[in-house]
Length: 618
Image (cartoon, rainbow, N blue to C red; front, side, top):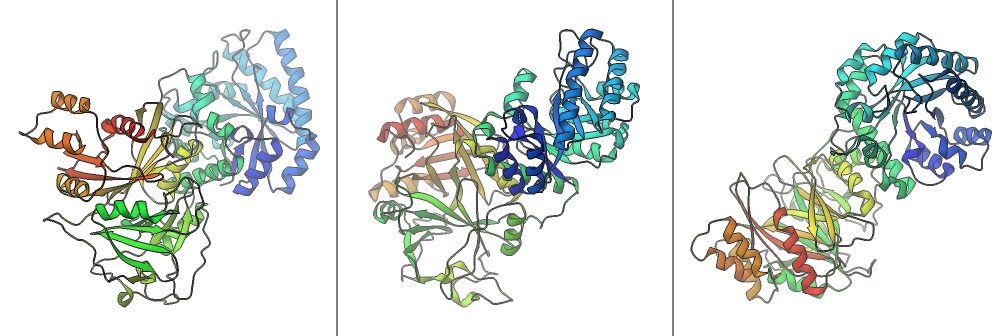
């Protein structure tokens, strides 16, 4: 179906918004009146600009406080409407949005509302315009979609229909099934928006917290299915009021918006992008650093061995068990030192995963390959992290050059490790009986304005399942956190963000390493000279009050700075290294099916990091 976006959903001037919508691939726009009033372009010039950009003007919005008014007030409303209809003729728009009245002059009289809307529609028809009547969730007398439809039906004018808005319907808890009783040809327009589930005034909720479909808690897909069953065939249009989007760059926001509609259309069966191929594991995490010595010291103390070096680049492979970390000492791109720059995702279909990512507007990253380099496909996540799609390795996928195919082979997928030469040092698979290590999860800091975009990206593009968002108290504000995972937990990524554009508390990244003996791993790390994050004694006093421990157990945790959590499924023990640049490591032990990430302990960890080095995320 055609896609459209309201200019109020994007930041910048009207021309910037139109350009961003066009580049993102939208077919049309809703022009919000304030955007037109503030534009130096004439309506004719705006019409021509849209035509040049390949955009139709699908809706002009809004007309307010029109219906159920005393006659003198309605006469003034008609005069205003006549001017707007003449403007729309110049603009080339044929549908106008009329919101249900919030005027103090409006009366609770459906018959009067229908009669006046019919007169308005008659005037609109003379100018070649249709009127789409929408129920505002906070309308004075008409606040539900079914009530708005009853008024439209009573008016009985061919130029009068209804506009359905997912926010106004779902925020009130209305049952959208009744939409199927509205004839499709009388649904003149459909506006879509999601929102987090909040307990607050619906007007403030609407004005500040809407988001794109798939980023909130509403069942937008379910509502769309009812609209389609009613026979609606117009555009799918986004109308999103959001404080973050108003401050964000229009181009990326428009891409995020269209990705949300592509994903939504796939969900309801309107589109068939390449099938999702969720990753099956973490192949590697790549750190970029101007100085490899500090991170090499931490990895060595953790028991990692430098097992291989890239044939043509300054990249070392450090490995312990199934956990692999690449250390890239190429030219520093940032001044804040070591950072987590790339993630290798094992995929059952790397080429298919790349095709899906491109279809869902993920930027494909160009790669400079030397002859013989593995032809890995990579895309950029919203935060700039490079994501590589890698063929899985294991008994059925032999490792190394002997089991790999060089670029150009039609039969086998190349192994990224074929680009590396062994150093002669074997990876440590076990120490003192400990099972092989692996990456438990990665924590990626997001720019403040891209947290919701990142959630949608990882769900739609990578096929990961978002978990509930969590707010964590930091000594200097609040940190938001949301995990996205595969169903089996083989891939877990935690997205974090501070509470404001200037809040850097979330800007550290970390790699969590799973072991079945966190106490032994912590002792060996410390014995090798690795500094563990010290945890305040007050934390352990509180643990003693909350849980019962075996003799000496709590004292061991206190000695090593190990934190503890428990949920309905099991227990979680974890501790942290100091920060190197922007990166630190976490040692974790999950027992009994524990599903979380120790969120209850995050405020203590954040405070401890601040205390250790005046941590501000850099």
